[in-house]
Length: 251
Length: 222
Length: 54
Image (cartoon, rainbow over all chains, first blue to last red; front, side, top):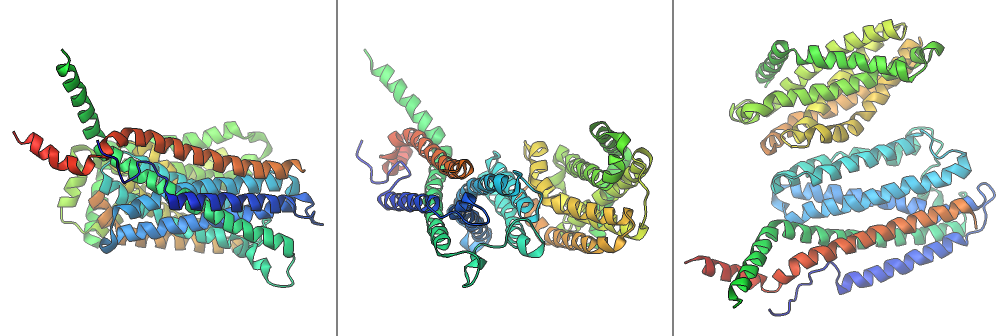
């Protein structure tokens, strides 16, 4: 047996570098975020600004990638297996980020609003988005013919477009308890001041890098999973055959 | 397309008329849901009367799930879906026909549930125009979305458990809008209800259009 | 250090760490399945048809 060029795992030199970069930026975010000054309105709780808005925005990016990849898969000219796998990988990472959005938001809401959860348009639409993605991921796990599953999942992913749009504009369309878009407050003269903006921007970069790293690895894992699915039987057969030969060769 | 739709709708409704599954199973289930709400919420303090619109629409939503599943279950046996594919009917027509059949069943269920909330929850129905308009728009939306997602899940071994997870978040806006519109009508301020009715109409139009355009490819894959 | 704030950061970091570890564990398990077969994979497909011919 010769050595192999293709790594069997999901790591590579490039992704290792990306991972280190993501970890460093994330560490910087945590340090910056936790050392933010106490704000007059929210006390220490405004320190969540370094992670909560970046996580929520990254979640939109993840679903945008899912929808884009699904559309590329659906369009016959660009139909390739990898678009389907990328859509699934990005959606799964997106689901993790959505769960974190809900969790960090809830943890911030408890001391600030006095409750873990309010039925405001932003929170509700985020929750619905989360369930839509869970449904999509469940659909992807249903055993069925590969091409059929890919097509059906790609169609199902399109629902994420209106869901994300409604979620994003929920704070503008309805009067919500949740405050308006954090990025919109970056214009001069708005309430967020320098240190907060800096921490949040570093947070955006960190979460973006973490997302890219996770999605890249989830994608490679999906490729491996698919190969294992397709070749798994061959491998098992070969192993059994080898065992048989070994037994037969024994004196 | 319209002729094909009428054919398919006629077929589905004829099956329902003969098998009576909707009448004997889905309708009692819907009323049972209303009764269960009365157990869960204290009936003496008027909570039921105040929350009647929401409870009504939750019951409708659950029933629409059953109706959608039933609509595809009747085609699961004897390769009924292959038959439909081979029939040469316009896929858009098949979609509209199946959605129309589900919609008609839902209208029947809503009449029953409407009587149910009047009798069981002592709700007073005001603003008939808004109520009926809401029912029509919501029914069209539910039937269209149900038919689109039903064909996605049809033919899967896990369809009974998967369809609710896929469909309920999608139709959540219908529940919200229909409940608000009904609340506005019942509280005697129908003016507040019209924007919600518009939302319902938009939802219905979007899903009807999605179904008409996308049903062919989905049926091929199912 | 405030309790809620540390909880928020803690939950975030822990979740990302758990997900990362899960990804790595899953890939390791899969590599074990695929690795013995991986090296001769390209030559194997050719060899297999020869082997099955008789």
